[in-house]
Image (cartoon, rainbow, N blue to C red; front, side, top):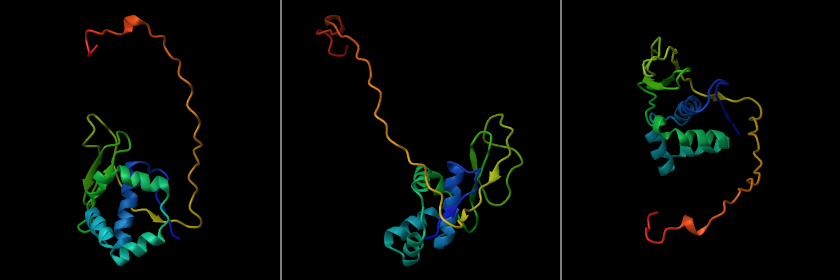
Length: 155
């Protein structure tokens, strides 16, 4: 199985966009909506591509959380996200990226264009296993008759 690797500096939105661009290119779809439609229709190339990929739960989660931005991506003509590393805001760009952030008020960051994820080499990294721990018991507060007002149903 193949897997997709994003840049180590990517997280959240940047990671989702990077994975999204790679998925669009691998499935030969132009937009995210076209990819969703092809998946629903059972397009053989899309099905084959997804069967050959080993997307981690973390990757699937980040893609799911950023569907609204992924719907703005386009392969041809190119429309991709540039993310400001200081404020985290993004803009959609075709080719050139502004030299300074134009979204965050007073932000002096320099947005960077997100690049497509690449094919990972070797075994995919393992996601950390989160053990569920029981919640700490909460202290109950004492209740007396003065806490209830029988005359006012909204009290």
